[in-house]
Image (cartoon, rainbow, N blue to C red; front, side, top):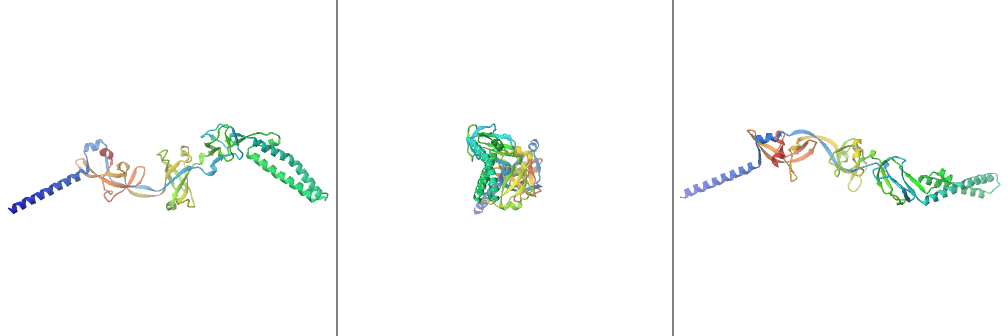
Length: 372
């Protein structure tokens, strides 16, 4: 009787193990994705092995579109006044020497009258100085009278030159003032050619001496100002290619070249400035101050890669479909997790734990058709 019970128990255990093994096989098989020959052909799917591709080695950087200091001008007036006329708007192009606006102030008249008075006095003081010098040389007058005449003449001459330069800063012609042509209105001219990017004036507005009336930039001189971390700076050299985007405005990738590399580390974040020259064709698409994300190409490398279309992304993880079986034109694929490395326009480097090599067969086209 005991032998019969033992045999029945052993049989039950073996049957249980067989069921468990069958269940495990079923589960394992459920990880495979099956594709029939008809599905494969109708969806235009393709299978290929990873290939060796060349990738750029890059250094990441951020920065902005900017112009050199000499190509940016903030217009102010060292004497305040009221805006009498202006027709310009932000975005207007101006040329060097073009009239930007006019200011009106009675103080302009006061400066001109003071200049005119000094100009009229200076001829008399000069002749008096010459006369006293002659008398002193002939020992007819005292040294005191001579030095007094010299001092008054030199003081008046200094005042004359100072007021003359002040008039020139106000764009007032000193010669016309000496002819008695005085005006309470002055014109402000463009010091450089370029585009107006800031306009803070309107008719009747009072402008203080410290106020920025408008700002002009020369867009022909747009460039990149990038910040590179200290650990990467020795990799950066002049004439290296830069690929950059303006993430807030476009996904388009633009080209530039390294032109200057800073010689000192700036700020607490330990960065160095890199100046990049832009292609002339793209300058009209960019604006001063735009934030950019850039990759500076410092080297190249070869790595195992697959087409970008072969990558499946789910919940921030990347997968490929690895061919597991091919029977009578029917395919079975296994989803394998991969780590992405460098990327190019068409290919992406794959980093795996030895599950994929150059002999592996991967679904390179149509992966999304069978997983969605």
